[in-house]
Image 1 (spheres, rainbow, N blue to C red):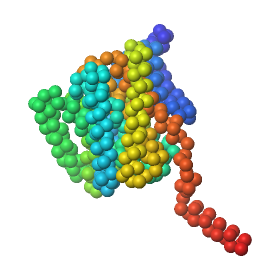
Image 2: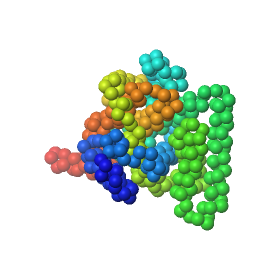
Image 3: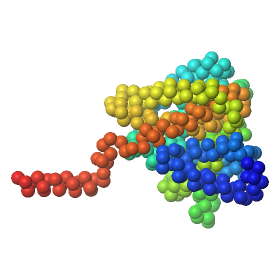
Amino acid sequence: MNRLQDLSPELQYVGLLFLLFIVPRVLQRYGLPTAVTSVGLGALAGLGLGLFHEDHTVELLATLGIVSLFLFAGLEVNLGELRRELPVLSQHIAVQLGLFVGVAFLVRPLFGLEFRAAALVSLALVTPSTGFILDSLASLGVTDRERFWIKSKAIATEIVALLVLFVTLQSSSLEQLALSVGVLAALIAVLPLVFRAFARVVVPYAPKSEFAFLLMIAVLCAFATRKLGVYYLVGAFVVGLTAQRFRERLPAITSEQMLHAVEMFASFFVPFYFFRAGLHLQREDFGWNALGTGLLLLLSLALVRVAAVAIHRRIALREPVRSGMRIGVSMLPTLVFTLVLADILRERFGISATLFGALIVYTLANTLIPSFVLRLPPRGYDSLRAPEVALLESQEEKVGGGGGN
């Protein structure tokens, strides 16, 4: 361990890059999500080797990761699609809010929490991590229809969860809430003016500058909301939503190429966020009580959350329970939301090491479930072929049948 600490910072960073971009990819073939591996590597570096503690470079890279992840989630919001499916999505949000309230009332006496802390714990337990889910959809064996509903439900839930998070964190007093709402409203009002000025003054003379502008604005707004006490994710998400309003005036800023660029940027920096989260873990967070509590939360809430989605879709869309369960399982990961809220709960509300460790165990475990349950293609996958291939096979069958007659 001392030898590793004696290495030059340059060599330590080279080793870190190798660990974060090679090891997780190797383990991914066995169904282990790269985010979980990155958290584990962070814990190994911090608890086992004593490396990168209070490292400002890792902190900066981690910040870029969380900002770009929520910027990507905001850019993925398609308001037209959400409006078209508003009745079903409204019912889904109502179910999720009911689940959130019920869990909050249960955990408050169970862990001896004040109301705001209980609300944040409930959010940490039931809010799907949209950015992570969207990034991992391609590796799951879900159909295009299931992918649409997973994306729509996760985005709709996250929008509401961010609003609840903002109100909860700023509700220590009416004055604080009013001030924060005013600042956030001003930020939302100013952003369109900034986008218009950029489209009019910069774009005609500096083509292909949209990516740098979008990222810069996301970082600035993320730091602004961080100063408000609601962490980086709110500001970055708001910038992504605002960009959607400029599809016509700035088509490049919401194009597929831009989405891909932001996704690639996030995929490079997000591992540093998960690595940093692992660095902040402590040995006392993972006693037997924490492990038992985390697994108990997993067994109870995972079943409830999947069943809530499946039953609602059965009632609202007459959909088979199996398909609804697949969507519910895909929405189980709460990784980013839980990690963020666990840090806030420990720093601002002083939750116990047992509860903090239970939240970490819960989120790491529920993040693993879709990878192992949905790795194989869904039943009927062979029928999801290109129309031209299906038509050709149909014609061949007819010709073969005609010859036999």
